[in-house]
Image (cartoon, rainbow, N blue to C red; front, side, top):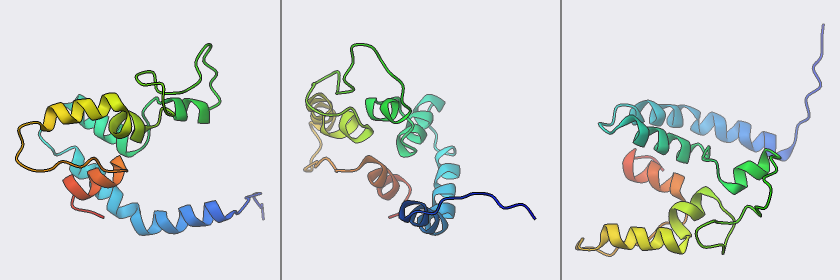
Length: 127
């Protein structure tokens, strides 16, 4: 019998538990996503956003990719790490875009803290 050397950590246990609880729910979400009547490039952006697969500074750094003359901060504002949440929600330039887009709507629009949770609860009725 062959034994594999697997290292168990709190993080891997957490991922396993959450994966079991959320796996089918997220899987259903991704299936639903492709049924939305939007251009494929928009759906791909949604998928990459929810999967944290956008080529942000944070994700590039996690993959140990070195980019010359870049400190992985937001190229638009320079004030924060370039994360998915930052570039889509908290960057001052993103806030300006959201304010422009929501101008004229008759309700108070508050930007959420987390883009994935917001997409799940707003568009796919989860959370």
